[in-house]
Each structure stands twice: as C-alpha cells, then as structure tokens.
Image (cartoon, rainbow, N blue to C red; front, side, top):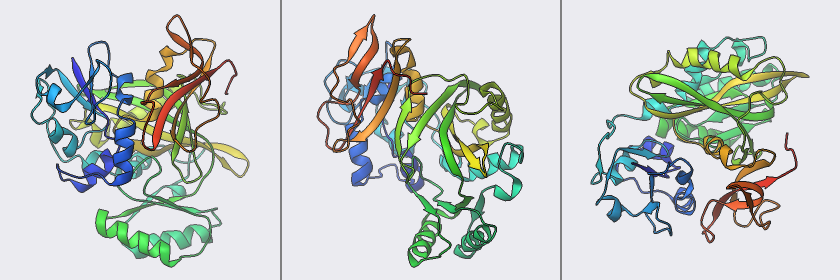
Length: 370
C-alpha cells in the first residue's frame, strides 16, 4: 500500500532547501484546507497522510502512519520538507533524497524550448524565453521586446508555479516596483526568466509519468486561470484533440514533447508525475501553440482532473474547481446526483465541508462545456 501527502507549496519548499521549512500563511492554509485531494490518486489500498485530523478510514495521522508500513510515499511534489515529515515512517521504496532544484527550476522551460522546433505554428526563435542573471539583462530584454512591438513582457521567478511568482507587464514603463521585484528575485533565487507576452486563447497541459527510466503519456487536460495567472478550474475529461486547433493532434504534440524530455534532466533519477503547461495563443489573427509555458515535476490540479474522469457519467460534462470560500462557483449548492457510482449532475465536494479559506470539488451538468 502507498502513502500520499498534499504539499502544494513544494516549489517554495525546494527553493528554501530547509527540511524543517515553515510554510507561510497562504500556502499553509492551502495545504490544510485541501489536504484530502490526494485521495483521488490513492487506489484501493492507499492512504492519505494529513497533519490535521480528517474523518474517514483512508486518512491517517502522522502517529498512525508511523505504526504502519508502506510500499511507496507520494507527496504532491517531492521536497526535503515532505520527506522529512515521514522520516520515521517505514517506507520500503524510499526515494533517494537529493537536490530537487534541478527538477523544479524554470531553467528547464528555457532548455525545453531551445530543443523544440521553433517557428511555424510555434513561437519563433526571437520569442524564446531568456534567463536574466542580472537586473540589467532583464531590463534590456524588456526594452527590446517592447521596441519590437510585442504586446507585453512576462517575468517569472525560478521556483514558483500555478500563477505565483509571475509578473505580467503590458506597458513599456520600467517602474520602481518592477525594479524592486526583479532585484529581489535575482538576489534570492539567482535569476529571472523573461518571456514575450502571448495573447492566450486556451490553457492546456500534457501529463506524463516518469517511472523506471521510461516516460508514459497520461493525457491532456484543459484548464482556466485568472488574469493574474492563478489556477481556477480544469475540465474533467481526457481530450483526444487540442480544443480550437485543427493543425496539430495530441498524439503529434506528445511525440514531439517526449523526444525533448528524453534529453532533459528528468531522465536522471526523477520518478513521478510531470506536467507541461501549454497554451493556444493568437498571433495577429493566426492561432499558434506555445508547447511549454512551464514544466511541473509534481502532481497538478489538471492531473487530478484526469484521474477523476472515470468518476463522471459518460454523457455529463464536469469541471473541477479550486476556489476561495467567499468566491464560490455558480452551482455549488446543487446536490450531487450519482448514477451507478458516477457523478451525473450537481456539485461533489472533494475538500472538507468547513475549511478556513479554500475549497475544491467537481460540478457536473448535462451541458457541453466545449
């Protein structure tokens, strides 16, 4: 049997490097409120470790886990903190603890795109991301792209994901706030990733599993984000096509991405889930695809949505939401209706009923989303 654990701030944990790292308030609330989500990955004999008690026979406290034995430990994302928490738990296939930064760094996005075919239906060579190790390099990128009439520039911190650590600039104005943020990130994390801003049409992610030196494709999921890049929801469906695109099939993109992944650092002892966030974007009236917005060497909400796809009735459409309790999605009060063990309609809550700030669940309907 396997043990699962929800640590959504794994990037921050790895960036810090301290096995005793204390989470800040926001990620701490997210971890506590949504700690039940890994149950979607746990099969019949799997358990979910929760640091605060949860009702249910599939959830175990740390004290209970230390009196059990498990085959594998699967945190949401590998980190020194996660493995330190279970240091006294008996785990047969305990993974090797190493420097996880090489897996999480946004340097991997730059490396990936440098090996991916440029131009045509993909970003051109002059649109590839750039690693700025000084503020002057970042600001030069900023000025250059605006001088070439791009619609904006994006700066990203090396160790952040899901909309965190991202700054989008649509005005050609280097303000004090931009300078302060850029200098802070470079000082604390080593560099800033600089990108051209693309006019997004659709967000989607390609999901893979690395195991025993091989790469398995799990599927494609479509998701939505807010204007600031924060995750909102995923459609619960394993897509065979990229929505809104007729010039590239999922199978083709999978083959192209797999060939690049085989040349990357993930082939060096990495084991577990890996997702590549992508986007369909508008380029002067023409649809194009950014094949790698970021790489997530961890579980993700899109991957979780894929795992739940077999829990939805065939003729129903479903959307998985993560939301703040004061901003619930429409339909949250609709009672869930199940048929033959599968969700037909209504809202199925996957987090606990009463949480401090965040909740998650699936809303199903007979209406077609896409």
